[in-house]
Image (cartoon, rainbow, N blue to C red; front, top):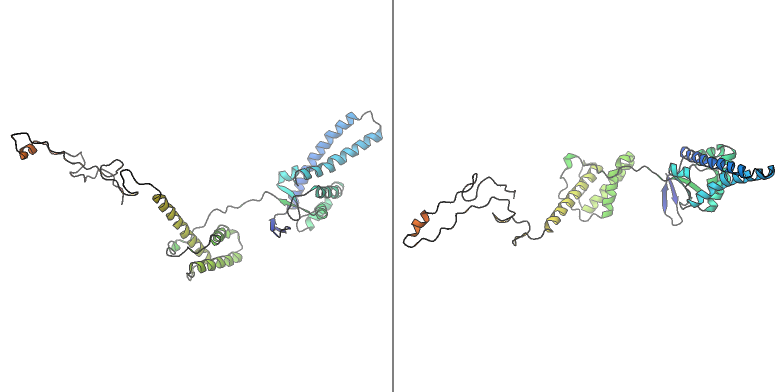
Length: 324
């Protein structure tokens, strides 16, 4: 990892490209340049067959300089440091301050590259890259540039390790209202990357975060609990509270039920949408005819018979009653 400081005093962490990836990129660029040079040479020989030998030699030298020297310079200038080989290997040429290169940078790199790559078959470039701490060749040193890696493998950092089972619910009464979001973010980043840290560095970072968290909550870290386990338990408690709050807000957002019932209240038995068993009631007795008494008229009305599986009065066990 190389830390570069820009003109605005911003530290950039860049990964310098090493010799194997740079050598592969140069070989790919040379292979493309040689193919283009051979095709161009064949075309020029066919078109300059009527010229004398001196003219043909001049055309050959011009084509060599144009393809093997001017070509890479033009490609790096127009693509801001990404030739075909570098794009294939995930590399890019940048300035020492991390900015994109310009024509003068590409010109210096290309001019010196003729000597240290083409004329010496890359021996000088390899030695300079091995000696340099950033893997730079002589063209990079004189041009003030650096070849960095663009494609960096990203580790999976979304998983939060769970706390030990014996800490589950231990901090349910902890006051977390005074903990800022920046501290929560730092705790989360530490928990997701603590397996990648040096043990001593990770332990010191966990102690510092645990002390900051305890100072915000007003409750010291219990004795005998490792700081990383304490952070994981408190983070799990915060997530559980957020889930409960989201569920409560979702329930409160539901409007009043049909029929004027408040949200969350059970509808009356027998109403549409009710999960309780319907109430079976006897129909009203008809009016007694003239000349008969009311009790006799009531005796002519057969009693209401509930459906099979139901008990009179609507207290049968055939329906599903949701838990309170």
